[in-house]
Length: 282
Image 1 (tube, rainbow, N blue to C red):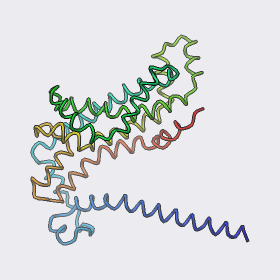
Image 2 (image 1 turned 90 degrees about the vertical axis):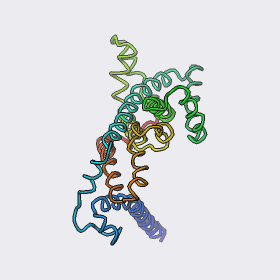
Image 3 (image 1 turned 30 degrees about the horizontal axis):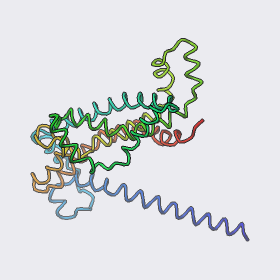
Image 4 (image 1 turned 45 degrees about the horizontal axis):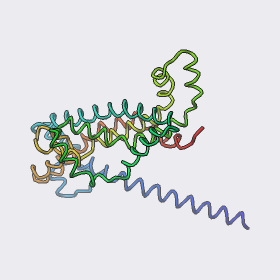
């Protein structure tokens, strides 16, 4: 009788888990569905039914978006900010994390680790006003200033993930490399970096998604001149400028999603392992 009750309860739990998974999938995919069908409709089709499937795949919205003034300037600005920021994040933060992870017993490195970790608990809204004030004084309310802030704000989360992951890498491999004549830099490049590739892919995707889609920091730092706008700023001003043309707006959203979808597709197999393996020390 107890076995029958256990099997029945397990079936109920399985059904509930599938219901929750399907519900979550619908919640995630339905906005994406609306974005695609709205971008492929004419304004007349959208006025008839916003949620219906397009009668014909109309590509004129994408052509109109790409022909808007300075669109490729905004795309270039987003690409420059994202590529340069992610490059420095992927170079500087792993180096800093490696130094901390391998010297955690020293007071200086431990203090530095907890100092960087404290940044996770400080909301951006708290530092928003002094940030803009100091950047204005330093004449950094421009694209280089935005890149510096992206790298700075990414350091807390990146160090937290990488230090735990690097500490799970056995030191014996590095010591064997030292015996063979490797220096610290060569051991880091040849031994450590290949072994922490999953977490590096995770940090790459998380920060690429964040920097590319970020709206608040560009709004505060770059809104002084339209020539410095990124794509999220263009899309924000797009609605008011073109009278809430949802077809053009959703077409611009879809175009902006393509680069981050490609980046995620290339690195997605490493993300789960990168977030979970570092939690277990060997």
